[in-house]
Amino acid sequence: MALQVAVDGGLRDAEAAVAGLVEDRVASRIFAHDASLWGADAADEAAIRLGWTDVAADAERLIPEIESLRAELRETGVDRIVLCGMGGSSLAPAVITRWSGVDLTMIDSTHPDVVRRALSGDLSRTAVVVSSKSGGTIETRSHLAAFSDAFRVAGIEPSQRIVIVTDPGSPLDEESRAAGRRVFTADPNVGGRFSALTAFGLVPAGLAGADLRRLLADAEGVRSAVAADDAANPALRLASALGAGLPRRFVLAVREDRSASWGLGRWIEQLVAESTGKDGRGVLPIALDADAPEFERVPESVVTVELSDAPANADAGAGDATDDVSGPTGAAIAVAGGLGAQLLTWEVATAVLGRLMEIDPFNQPDVESAKVAARTALDGDASSEDADDAELRAAAGARLLAVPDDVEVADAGALVARLRDAAAGAGYLSLQAYLDPHGEEAEPLDRFRDRLAQVLGLPVALGWGPSYLHSTGQLHKGGPAAAVFLQLTATGPESLPIPGADRGFDALIEAQARGDRTVLAERGRPVFALACPDPAATVRELDAALAALGS
Image (cartoon, rainbow, N blue to C red; front, side, top):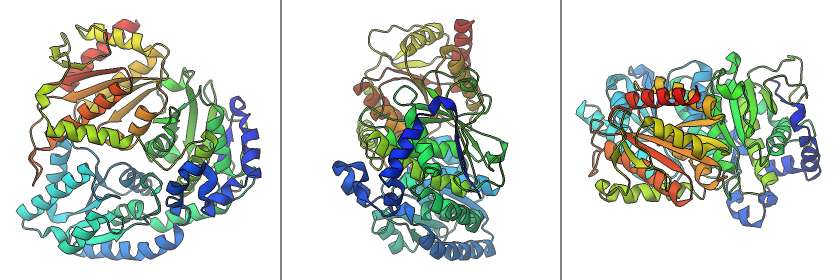
């Protein structure tokens, strides 16, 4: 299928960047695995991270194996696929299965209610895919332990129902083979966020019934265009347009039209934010609903991105583009094409953007900091929180865990007022919810997000913790120091033990939230944090206070 990248006049200086990329043969050198493209400091990392440019051969080997296992599972009555994975190990399969119209239950949370809900499904018809590149991701290891125990209790041999996707030689690979589990190994020369068309994307999506052959054919159909040193190369055009707005316009407000309602924006969030958010620079995509306030009154920090399935001109060839994008006020980019073509084009564009920004797009230097802080919090005494620990009046009994220095907050009205003051001149607000994304707080939180964007005039990124730690979390800590953070956690969720561990999922998610806000504060980011006994009620009261403030 053809793919188009169209750019409006506000970003036309991107043409000069395209010309430079063509002259430097950047596209063809990426596909030739030229690790020198991002500088000497990045060369070692880049040398082992370019395998995603050559996925077809490995995919052709994998697809028959995936189809065979799927048929085998179906013959035994197993038709419910659960995916346990974080970041790059879960976002792509979620998009692919939605695109293909098949069901996939995904767990990328440590909230006890989320895990409990997945465990309560019909295990007699369930297979679980556990995906982890390193084999040591704490969330995924905890999910694995929980499902292994649940299968045993149900009288089901876990090794017959648990499928592993990991790098060859990882701890998870070795122990799983010893345990008799089915193991799919991925190309180790592909980083997690570039792994959509590798085993990490294909195995869970294929077991769920997605049309992998159509997906790969779509990607291969655009490969020659995105590998070409040509001004019409859609990946070069996209990267140059994204770079043209920097540093002022560093937030991408991303929406999908009805033809492409796959959730692709969330995958783009991780790919671009984690790849570029470092050294005080970055590009932050925010996946938004089509009617989000950011599209009505475009903030100064925002470039709007419109995603659609088919190019407007069905006869156009891959890489064809126009410069007459119509859309909201402000700079705009439109990317139109099938899912496979979109995945490969955005991957190439992200690698090219790293060169334009003079950063290493393949490392994630600030991700580990939150993991270390979370482990410290998990091993320590949760009661030693060095926060005000004061009840926030008129906010459903929420406790104040953190506020920026010299800021006094007594009630919900004061909190949103101080939040507004802190956000003056900021590039975006990050709303971080260590809550149940399918709980009763989800709907009021969406409304509150929209209200924040409307009243503050800023783009607002709603991230569900701890999932976003493996996505936009890198940028929040290592990217532009231009954000304000509001973190919401739940107090007293019903405990759920992690088999073989001293503490349960409730302690784990609490430690992850605490570790994240600790690192953000250490980086000088203004953080407001609330612990909520009734998150839905707290969010509704904050929303009402914000509405009054904005009236």
